Image (cartoon, rainbow, N blue to C red; front, side, top):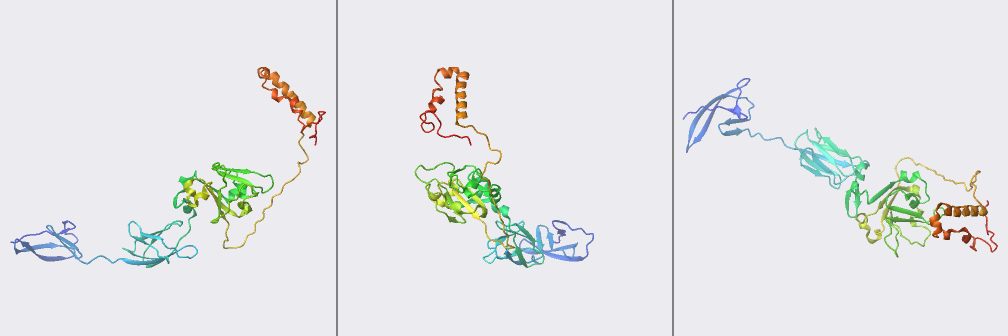
Length: 364
């Protein structure tokens, strides 16, 4: 049985225009149990890779191009190898990570492939492979990316979720208002942190309470951690805290942990809150010397304020007592102002002598 067949390209009839070759194709089709001769004549391009005959397809088994092996080394700005860096082929799920020496090996499909290299705390880089088989990648630090996460206990969460439980103060903020100690510099800086000075002497003891008092008999002092070292908490009978001996100018940043989630890693010692202090460290480059000086004037100045002496003060007090009767007659009649009679106050033996003369005078 003779059959006439039409040869298709990409599922449709071949376009006879512009063809560069003509050939005679003889095909054999299996019909039933025995072969049947089939004769087909058609024009087709010399570089044709697939020919469709009816429902059958004959493909050119030339194979695809082999993947390109790429080897690279990832280092930071200091030239140190960075392990665990993610290396991913852009637009795919194929990738790898660097080993302990910062080296990775990856097969890419073509020279047009783009490698996406990323790691926490560093800027993400995209590198086109091209004709390169060996890559030397240098990562640059991204400080903003590091600040987006805050370590809390044994985990990490977004900083935006911890605005109420973690307070932060930078060195620039502390230097805006000179203070003799860190605790005095924290006054009014962080919500929920109350700072009171119990002594008027310079550098005197200050008490810090994070979100109020948590105990009546035990200490309410927070836990101080300086560069990873826990300082002794002390007690209320001491004149100063251990943190008071740290120069505020040596501090880079202060983090105040106020919630149980953020203080969990410190256990019971962090029940009253935790204050984490980071101090300055050495940097490469030229040395720099900074000098700051504060001074005060122990006098009141040429224009001293005029105040009342004891006799003048008593006269003003008598006038105020008479005004009570004048402007509040109902309360005066009811005895509301009886205890405010200046005559009763003038019998105080600590202030007046037996004859009524004052024991001291404020006429400076």
